[in-house]
Image (cartoon, rainbow, N blue to C red; front, top):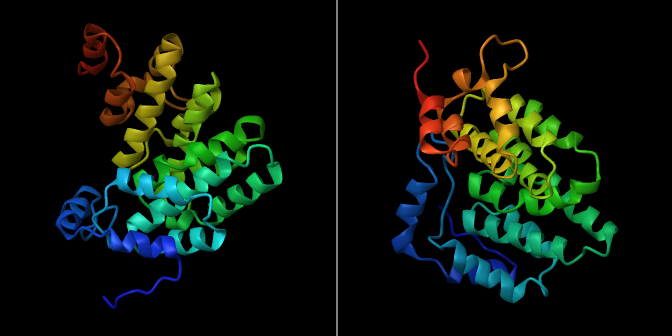
Length: 250
């Protein structure tokens, strides 16, 4: 690959942190092989705490041109850095809704570059989740049903983390139901994870959800949902109860 040239000081600072010894491990961890979910992604071998430290030191002086160059870079760590910068900018613009709207619009127009689970999970509920706390959440249902990529669908469910933390569970439950029988285990894990978060706050709501039938189905959800999603959802249940849910049905 031809060496890429970047104009952003931040992008070049990240390049200077490149660690060849970690590239192969990160490439395997994020499944960049042929046919895998991260196929073709490029890594510089930089761990997340290092990227966070850089963001902490430079977010105030960073510009949206910096963020644009980082998020559209072929390097995973650049895209992560750009998203973490955006998270910081959004959080510190809380008294300026017009500025926050700009960051949200930018985020939504760049979802094609938010193309791995860590990029989704470290940005969506901090930006979209906070923004949508007091606003209609139609975009999340659109992403869940018609997302252009699996990553937009993951954004739909993981964004609900912010609502759950504020005691609002309905959207999480409804979006989980839309995605319940998704074909990919990364969505199964996300759905189970968010259902588990609901259960931490309202165990009876989660139990009711699992034991009731999904619309159009004749069996309780827990008997038909992907096993991975179920295991994640009931992880905090008492062991005896967990085994009851996991016991094969005759």
